[in-house]
Image (cartoon, rainbow, N blue to C red; front, top):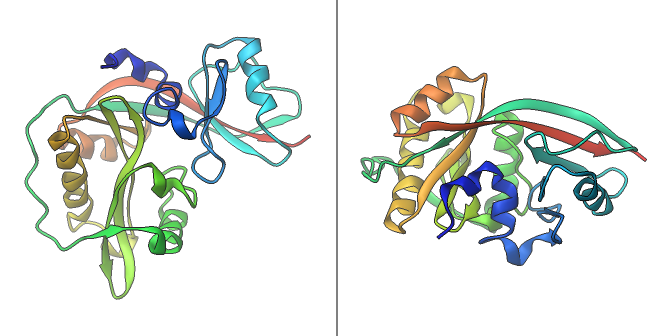
Amino acid sequence: MIAERALDNPVWASLNSRHAPIAEGGDLARRYPRDVSPLCALAAPTQACADAMVAMTGVGDEIAVFGPQMPATPAGFEIFRQMGILQMIRRDRAPLPPPAIAFDELGDDDVDAMLALVELTRPGPFCRRTIDLGRFVGVREAGRIVAMAGERMWIDDHREVSGVCTHPDAQGRGIARALMAEVIDRMLDAGQVPFLHVEATKAPVIAFYGSLGFEPRASFVVTGYRRVA
């Protein structure tokens, strides 16, 4: 079992744990495949690790790095986004009430609709093959997906709840709570500890996650880099 402190560098820990089989890179830097996630991590905040990350990118490539890992913005790169992130964890083992709504398991045939919902709601990075990282559930109305939730990083027995979003037309009806309950309870049944990441400025969302049993654990700055030369 990996200790909770592995979450201090969550992307690195995930790419060296359950997601090691799909990781690109080596001992200094690793990343998810480009069509899975832009997340990239360094083993340590050193120039050698930063150089290893640079070697894994090409012109036009975009990556996202957790924490103050980069010694400096690499030559040929620009920062296109930066935000504070709060990491929250649910140590409480009590299950949540099961969802009282009809939901579907989402699969490959749903990716285009999932991407459209993500484009509208901006819950965080979501690529065409992000669905390969775990199970996703969703609610359909009038033939479209109006809400979803699923899994992303996986660090031994710690599993990240991710991709939580609801179409504006369907908000305020408890759908996100119901879908998260399904995802969280599955994790608990599997003996896993749920955790998640949320923008630090979104106080109502943080309070919502708190009502589901999550508590703050750590803060990060996530930086999006784009290689331009």
